[in-house]
Image 1: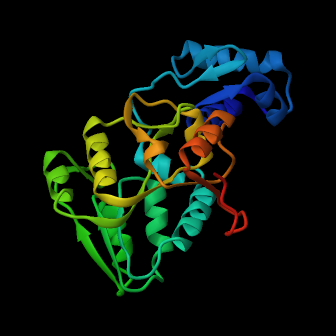
Image 2 (image 1 turned 180 degrees about the vertical axis):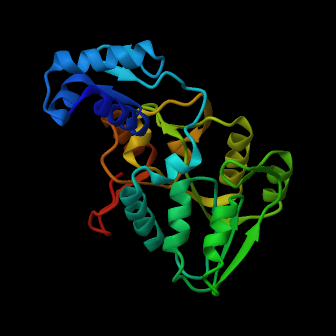
Length: 261
C-alpha cells in the first residue's frame, strides 16, 4: 500500500481512537516502523497530527469531530452498548436521553418498550422514537445546535428543572482516568449536569474510544452515576474507582447478570 493510501487510513484511526502507535500501525499495514515514522512525520508537517512518544495524537482537545463522522464511528459497539442498557430500562419508566450518537442508539433499542416516557434535548432521539406508539416524547426547548440537532443553553436547563425522572442515560465525549466525564461544549455540559441532578438514577453509555480521547470541560464524576455501560474493560484506575464508588461497570456482550463493581 502506498503512502497516499495509508495516510487517510491513519487519520481515520487517529480520529476514532485519539492517538496512534508506531508499532501497531506497522503491524496493521504490514510495513516497517521506519515507514510509519515517515508517515507520521508527513502528517505532523501538515498539522494533522502531533507527535508523542511511540506515536501521535490528534492535536485539538477543544473541538469535537463532526456529527456525521461521530455517528459512523464504532456503530457496532454503540448498538451493543445500547441494547444492553435498554435491558435495564423497565417498561413504564420516565427516561431522559441526552445529546450523543450512543444515546441515539439507546433510543433505537427502546423502540419495543411499552408505556415509557422519554424526555430529551436531542431532536434525533425524538425523531427515532416517533416510531414507537407506546412512547410519550417530551422534547425540551432551547438553543438549537444545527450541527447535531442538540438543544442547549439556559432555556434547556430551566426546562429540565421542571421534571424529575426515573433514569437519565447520558453520553460524553471523553472519560479520563480520574473517572471524570468530559465534553467540548460548555453549554451542553451545564445541561448534562442538570439532567443528572434531576434523575433518580443516572447511567453512562460510552464506547472504549472515549478512554483515549481528551476534552476540556468536566460534566461529572462516575461517582455520581449508578451504572456505566461500555464495550470493553476501562483502564485499571477507572475500574478501581468505580469499585470504590459502587458504580457498576457493565460490558456489552457479557452475561446480562454479570455486573462489575
